[in-house]
Image 1 (cartoon, rainbow, N blue to C red):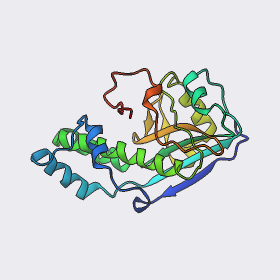
Image 2 (cartoon, rainbow, N blue to C red; image 1 turned 30 degrees about the vertical axis):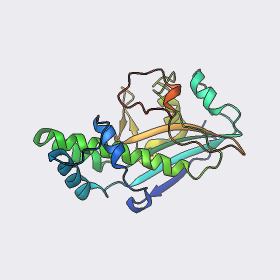
Image 3 (cartoon, helix red, strand yellow; image 1 turned 45 degrees about the horizontal axis):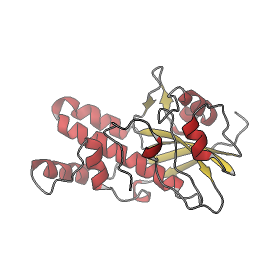
Image 4 (cartoon, rainbow, N blue to C red; image 1 turned 60 degrees about the vertical axis):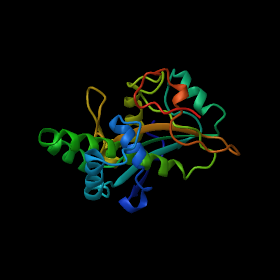
Length: 214
């Protein structure tokens, strides 16, 4: 796996798409965007102060096929027919972890909003990175659907995430910084590009983060 060329891209806060307030609220566990009240005021305060702290880093490999073994049928379905497979890791940095840690005891509600904002920002980073590839499929991640979280080890070995962009993996297979993502997608020449994950391919129908399908 070490024979693949690992590319690195960096993004400033201004490079990232505008914050999707609906998504931030969704990551807090709310399906509705409050039109007013204390919670809406708190969200506005947090976005005003911390909305621009994300700094994006992505490392990735382009390969003619999946560069490691996987028995995931869901992943196989996503990348079937692809002329190229992209494996990548993305992070918006340690600043979110630092601020979340600061608020955990003093203001759990602020910590929750920072968790949600970091989740929205790293997904926005993934969307931005993936948007540069025409004919892209939806993306699929270790721990998603039937792909075991243990596949993180294969991704980290392939991408050398810690030395390339500073993401480490602990014994529990959790990433640091926590607002980091690893994912895989394919390129199908001439196909309409897809965005994000396809929740219809995941068996966790009770997931609170599940997006409604059109």
